[in-house]
Image (cartoon, rainbow, N blue to C red; front, side, top):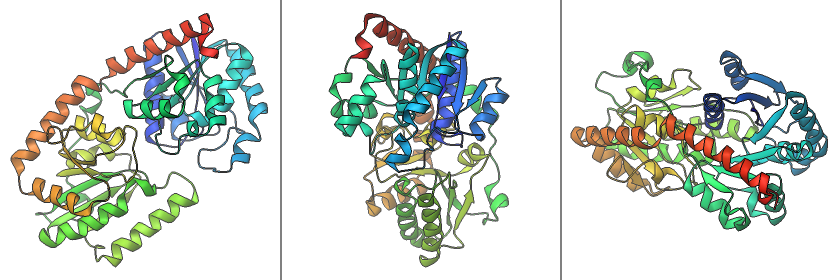
Length: 390
């Protein structure tokens, strides 16, 4: 079966990494994936490297544009264009990688008479909170797929009519992906002192990702451990909000006197190498994070983790078993967790080993692929009985 995967951007991000993996998983299920995106970028390049066909639809609204009118102005026209692509390519399922693109691609699937799946990667500011948007999204999807139980519960809280045609499939990786990841010399790479204790963070420059909160906690922690250094990996994906936030972070580091202790690396192709090489990995969003890809990477690479006890994070990190969970924006809790791990190498090793074991048991390529297969089966079954069009 041919499957059209719609995405509102081709930039690099966690949702795009996951989308690529789902397309490859669909191929293992003997389907033929095709990407639909508004323009060129990291995702289209990777698809072509994997010999996944690409269709461009420039009028698809960009993910970073917040205007509702901008989103809906090309709605019907885009739906008609998607329907034509579906018919031309003999598509059997349209898989929208976000609700934002589902308005356009889901309606296109309806016009073409084929099945539609909406994949939800977000948990904050869900469009399902609006009765009108929730009703529309439920009508243009035969099945709703979520990345964590936390996201699924949030969607159902706003749109209970989706019960019976919604499910969670965790993002998964083959552990062999990490075999070629190198442990690099961060001291030499970034000019750090030989005795530096390196705390790492990898995230986009999005305000709720919590880098500003991390800077506050790190400043307090470094007063106790002057040899500590902070590596902030990530860049601006697009939009004025992220660009402004990145500037604010640099200014804040200077105000806190951390300009010689914090390294802003920007976006890095070798982010996995950097994650593997830090002493402690920290991810402390201030709002619910659906299922952070960076925490899955850190788990697979056997790093000790500190993370916010929010969103889908507790589905990855079990407190005091595979990492330490802290209350969002509680500076002293984060400082205390950093202090505890910095002073206890045995605990770091124990947590890191348990994180790897949980990754290998839960977040596997096979589990993801088989889960996707069930979603497509159930989606087509619901559609054939008419239940998916309620």
